[in-house]
Length: 261
Length: 233
Image (cartoon, rainbow over all chains, first blue to last red; front, side, top):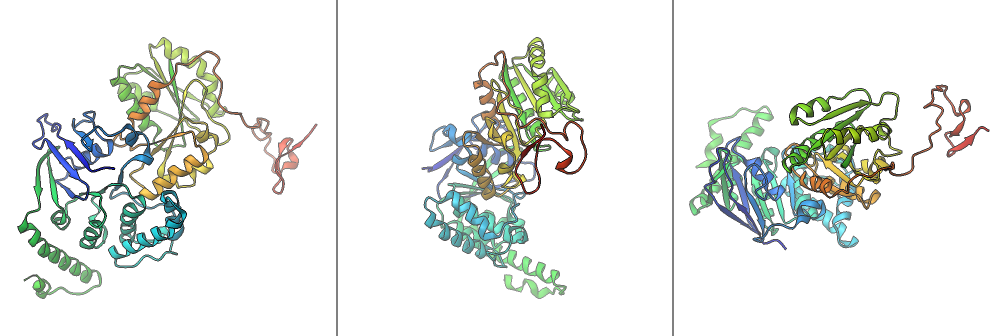
């Protein structure tokens, strides 16, 4: 049973000790990792995936429940508590969605009788995130980008059921992010988003700020940001509405931003 | 001398996996020698020699079965590695034959396969997988968790005793257990044997008869409707 993951700071690329010496991620936390391109976000994700023990370039250490993680986590892929979804991650299978999910649920389910329920839950979850509902009989390869991303997240959350889910820049995928954050919060896991998206960052409990290869700050979302996040979401929605209008050959007017006031 | 033989289809990331392993083995104080066996083209020997300053060799199998070419040359190669001052010999082979394997008893057998090759791949590649000690699965960041898990479970279906190790060879994630496996490997001994039972070796096509249709062939043949049968004296 995992309760906390701890990141113990290492050194920046210049050899300077990280400003943040220790971060405890607790079960149920929704966390963002932010920072400019090249600031070391992917390296931090890699340290987590590797359960770094001062044996990576950064010198960081990762603890689970305050202890060195069991070797099994590292050695046995079936025991690894982390599910990873990157921007490159996709489905390759050309099976119908239902067959595909049945194969996966069949491996994960403790009892055969759970399989059907797991599939339905996964489908419902995914369909809340995507504009165009996924049909169980359509082939995996026929899914749109948004549907694929939605199903990846739903499958990792419900069928994989790993206690830690890493999502690396999944925002550009055409899914309902606010709804995703709400739904994910119903599952007691640690969700870690690598993101450039203010909407996801503000809906997180806190954000880990990276620069020059090291963790410089941990910023908890404060009351002001929490209130303001509604406006940020609104602005984001307005932008996507405008994007849709452009897509469908319409003209934009100055009225587009009126909803913001 | 410790020996590891690494097989796997082309472009799955064998060389990338071995590169990370060599780096880590060197850091642990090991002296590595590297032998590459391929059919007609390879340059890993030159690349690794330059990158790591280690003794390397390459053999083109040409007309020989590449998986077994290494069995032919392995005796000499172990002596060469010994003379070069190495304590570990890594052999990389193309691994093209799905009816037999290039592994030997007395050495670690590693297959490198990519998660992106479809969830049925483990069911298709026979002894190259089932006779290995470790199945290294690469490109894990490219496929969904679901496919990763189905892929893994298919490997265990056909090869329950093979240890599955997932790696991201881009960032060197998952390499440490492979390094441990080599360290824990017993030293090689004299008179080592090829692992598993070789397939029927008397194929008339392999010896150069090109006529179409089983009627033109002899030895173990088969027609479309029948299983293998023997034709001849």
